[in-house]
Length: 319
Image (cartoon, rainbow, N blue to C red; front, side, top):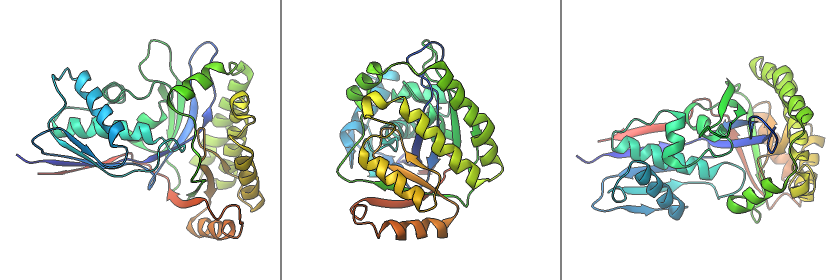
């Protein structure tokens, strides 16, 4: 019987890691899932294994990883088509969302259970550091990653909160740059000094006493200020690789420009180059975009308005 599985994932903002290189749990951190910044793909019937669309080579590798995990003698016989996806390595977690979508789509196509974070991580080979993208794929929302121990395949999520639906995220990205990924990212993290224990405690305290209470109370001002402080302090731990709390002087200048326009909640997602700004509502987001358009050095940037995703990936099945 012919079947088509369509999966639409959220995108992911990562506000920064709060631990790595020391003892105890590694790669703890904070992130949020977004609508309109993820991957859409479909898995359908075919006479042979076929993959097409943006990032098709990466999708093929993820399909082969799925086959190896399932101990299949050959790649699955189906057609994977990536319908849309942001560019790779821009701070939106595209690689993880693509890998999870391929694994979930294939599992759904072959009627294999997959709605478990550890299992999904193993079928896709993702989540070796941060667990936010994996849990966010399943559940959406604002996620606090407690980190992972050496013998754990995937980190643990210590808190998840629903983001107020009126809030908007304005994403600003320079089209000609990309963040660290793959082996370069691994080497960069390995070369960094461990996050001091007092910094980890400070960042966790900021999450517990300001960021989580603010999102629960829909306190945009308190949440925005907390996110900026968290991102700046977490970014300082990467100064040896970035040259400062942000990936470049241009990103630092852009963040300062947005703050001067009255938006306190702004920062760099992951290694960048995507900069996010948290707007109170749709009209505030549109007003910010209009103001940014008046800056000559920002006019060439890709700018989009997104809403937080509070439900995770969607799956549609057509028979």
